[in-house]
Image 1 (tube, chains in turn red, brown):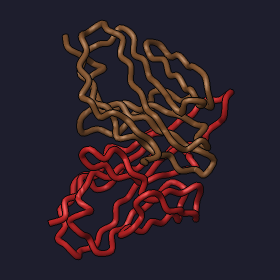
Image 2: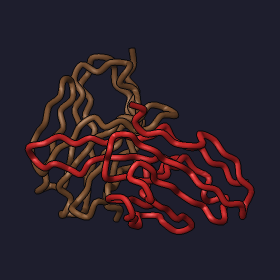
Image 3: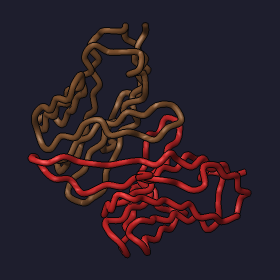
Image 4: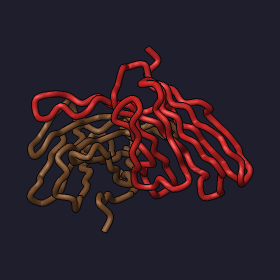
Length: 117
Length: 110
């Protein structure tokens, strides 16, 4: 059971280059999320998915695209990287909340550190 | 006004003290409330989950939600140096998005 894995762990891009970040989970979770974390800004939601074949915009979706072709994978794409996209990117997966009587399970990946020069 | 407000700290307390961490929010539709712990250069780890108002206890950790005041708290009893980390609150309504606070850096002094 690997939990949530992210590929790659580090990447340096030049302005205008493209790349795809891969998130994989082996817990059969329906929900997957992409966040970015910048100093002093906390975690900001980029895009999320509530199931295979679905995606939705979060707080800061501009400049990013996502796809969820398989339940276990959630891809984040940068079509034309900009220095403002320098950040640490975290993927997470979860079940949906179970209300007052249940528990909630969510796991984050180790992060991808992206630098755009 | 940002949806979720959290004092960034840093907060320094002596070992063994009770720690109180807080968040306020503006969206009255939030009903799922979480606390995460994040060590340096690691991903966040879910600590506590609370639905609607009330208290929840897990070991040394207690989470409180006061929906009437739009205020949530995390208490850590008998704090240890290993509790030194950034603590993030997060919350969600029915629309599937989970919104995070900016996090509070906590230092437990031996």
